[in-house]
Image (cartoon, rainbow over all chains, first blue to last red; front, side, top):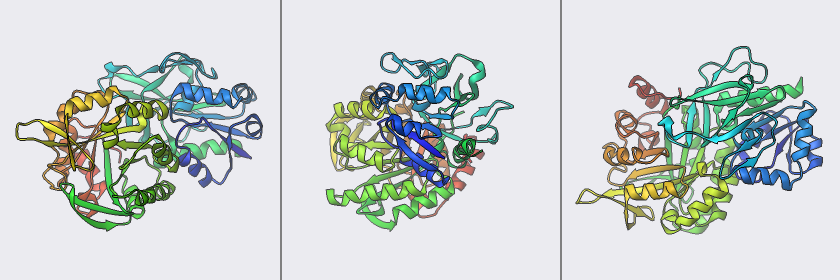
Length: 207
Length: 252
C-alpha cells in the first residue's frame, strides 16, 4: 500500500510528507507515470501558481495518467492549489485548463467580501450532514488553516461537502465526488483537525 | 468566519532566541526549536522566526532550525531576515517554511518581490515594514533591522508592495518594540484600512488588552508579540481566552 504525493514543482512539501510519515504509510514522490501507477492513492499538494502547477504535471507527462487513476476509482485528494487543479479551468493570471475531475471554475475571491485577500488564517468549516469518508467525523468546532486568493466555484451543489463564510461570501472548503476529494485549507498545517483528515484519507486505502 | 491570529515571534541570532528593546540591547533567552514547540503546545496560530544574525555563515544555521521546527510543529511557519535572492527563499521553503518575510530585500529589489510572488505564489510572500514616527507625524520606513532610514513613507510603501505581489504585511512600530506600551494603533489602522491584503500588527505588546486593541482598534488580521510570551508573562492560551472574552473570534 502506497500513497503518492504528486510533485507539482513548487515550494513546501516538507510538512505534508512529515504528516504522512507519521501515519506510518509508504510514500513516494510522483513525478512520472510509473510512480503514479504504483500508487494506491494520490495527494496533489498545493503551493504556488496554477499555471506552473498544471505545466509541471504536463512536463511530467502524468495528466492523462491522473485522469485514468481517477477513472479507476482510486482516491485522489487535492490540497489548496491541488484542489483547484481538480477543476475544469482557472482564471488565475490568464485562463488555464485544469484536470476537470470535478466540474467547476477557479475564480478570484471577490473584493466585495470586505475582508482581506488573500484569505490567510484559521476558519471554521461548516460540514453538511451525512457526508462520507474521509470527512465524516470532523468536529463542528473545527479550525482549519487557509491561505489562498482564488476559490473553487463548483458547478454541482452535491460536490460541496463543506464551506466557510468569508465576509458575505461562501467559499467551498471541502469538495468530493466519490473518489475525488479536495480541501481548500491545508490539513498538514491545521493541527489536530487537519491530521484527522489525513488519517481518514489513509484509512480509505487501508480498508 | 476568519479567526484573528496570535503569532509569537522569535528573533534568532546565531542560533539563539534573543530579545531587545527598540531593536537594540539584545539578550539571549532560549533555544528556538524548544521555544517553538512550547508555543505549538499553547495553541499558537502561526510562528514567526526572524533571523537577525550578522554574518552569512551564521545564517545557514537558520535552515537547520527551520527543518527541526517543521519536524515538530503542525502550524504555519514564517521565516524572515537576511534574505538575498530567490534561491534563499526556495531553500527556506524547502526546509519547511510556509511564508517568507522580506524587508530590506523588498526595499532594494521591488521587482524581485514580484518575481518571488509569481514563482512561489503571493500568499507566501510577506513584506515586513519597520516604521518610526518622525517629529512631523509622518511614518518612515527603516531597513537593515532598523539601522537604515529610507525615504519611504509607510502607507505609500504598503500600497506599493501590495501592487507588487505581497500577500501580507507585517507592520512593526520601532518606537513601541519591546516597550510594552501597546501597538501603534494609528499607523496599524491607517495601513489595514487602505490595503486589501492582511496586516499583522507588531511591536509593543505588554498587556493582553493590547492584543485586543490591535485587532479591534487597529483592524489587524493578526497580532504578533515576542516578550510577553517569551518571558512567560502570559501564555498563548491565556491571551486567546482573554481575546475571546473581549469579543474577538479566535481559535481555541
